[in-house]
Image (tube, rainbow, N blue to C red; front, side):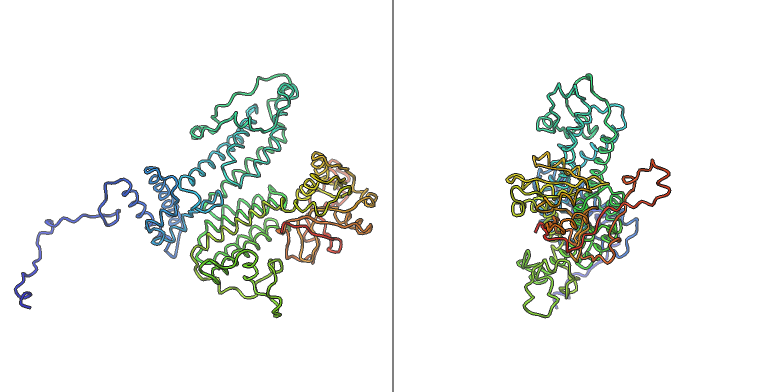
Length: 615
C-alpha cells in the first residue's frame, strides 16, 4: 500500500496530436508486411471475412447476391495470383485453406466457393489449383471453337469444317468425362463430312482415308495461346485445292447436325460452371421440352450430372435441406416430360443415396461404417415385423420408402457434401458402364446356330448381340418397326458387325416366329408390375412369341425400373406426328381421317420371361 501511495498519479494529456495512431479502414488490424505473398494472404483474409459476413445475414437481396459473386470472383483471382507468384501449381486449394485456418474461420465462405473440381467429377485433393484453372482454360477453348463453328456454318465455304472438328475433338479429351459422348458423335459423322466435301474424285485421290485417325489429330496441333484472340488460329495446312467433284458447302443434314452438336456442348459447359442452380435446371428443362435429348440413357446421364451439380454448388447445411432442394428441382425436371419416368427414377435414386450417406454418418461418425449393399440395406428398416426379413437386400428396398428415417436428417455432419458427391459420381460411372455390364452376359443367353428376333434400334440390344457375335454364330431377324422404321438402323448396325441379319416388315412377324428361338427386346421403362413401356409394335411381337411358346428376353438398365403402376396405360404413352403414317400432302384424306401415331406400347408382364440388367 505504501508503494501505491507514493506512486506517480496518472495525468491526462491535453495535446492529442502528440499521440499518433495508425488508422486501418480496409486492412486487417496488423502491420502490412512488405512481402508480396503476405500482402496477398492478408487480402485473401479480408475478402473471405467480408464474404462470410454477407453469407451469415438472414436476408439476402439482389444487391447482396451481386456482392457475393463479386467477392468470390475477386478471391479466386487473388488465389490464382498467390499460387502463380510462388510456383505452387500442385498445391490443392482446400489444403491452403486448412493450413491457414480459413476453413474453420469461414465455413460458409468455403461452401460458397465450392472448391471441388466439378468439371472432372473429382474432389479438390486430387487436383491442384493449377489443374483447376487449366480445366477452366480447356473448357473456354471448347466453347470458343463451338461458337466459331456455329458462325462458320453461315458462310459460303465449309472447306475448313473438318479441320475445325478435328481441333474440337482434340480439345474434348482433356475437358472431362462429360464430353466423351460428343467425341463419339464426331467420330460417327467425321468421315461422312470429309467424304461429302471432298467428293468422289477427291476421295479416290486420297485413297478413301476419311476417318478421324491419329494422323488427323497430329496434323492439327493445339496452340493454347492463340485461343485468346482467334480460337481457330492454328497452324494447319490448308485442304487440297478444289478439284473436280469437290463441294464447298455441307449438306442441310450436316449443317443441322453441327448446330445441334455445338449447342449441346455449350449448354453442357454452362451447366458445369454456372453457379446459378435455376439457370442449370432451366437449361436441361428446355432441352427436354424440345426433345434435344432422346433416349433413356442420355436423359438419365444428363439428369444425374445436373443433380450432382446442384449438390455441389447449392448452399445447404443438413441433409433435410438438400433433400427438399433435390425434390423441388426434380419436380421441375419431371414436369418437362411427364410421361417419361426415367427422370423421376434418377431423382429417386439420388435421394436414396443422400439418405444412405446420412445414415452411415449417423450410425458411425468415425467413417468406418457399412458400405455398398450392406449400407443400403441398413439405411432402410424392413417394413415387415418378421425378424427373418431383416436381412433383405437393397434390391427390395431400392424403390421403397424408409420405415423410420435415421434421426430427423437435420443434424449438421462435416464432409457430408463430399461424401454425397462421391456417391453420385459412382452412380454416374455405373450408368456409363451399363452397356458393358449387360453385354458381357450375352454368352449365357445366346448360343450357336440360334435365330433371334428383335425390333427397333435399342443400343443395349445392339451391343448385347455384337458381344455375343464375337464367339457365337447366329442369325438375327430385325422387324422394321414401321412407321418409325428404326429397325433399318439396327439391321445396318448388326450387318456391319458381321452378323447374319434379315430385315422383315411388321406384317411378317407371325409367319417368321415359328423359326425363331428367342426374342430379345429393349425397353424405355420397367413398371412396378413388371410391365414394359416399349417401342410401338412390341405388343404384337410378344403375343406372337407367346402363341409359339418362344421366350422373350428384355435388356434394360436398372435405372429404368420405376415404382409407377400402369393404372391407365394411355397416360404413359406419347403421340407423335402422324406424318409418317399419312403424309400431309394428302390434304383431302387428312381433313377427313383422325390419325393416331403412338410412340410406345404397353407390354403386360405375363409376356416377359426374363429381364437382363446391369446389376
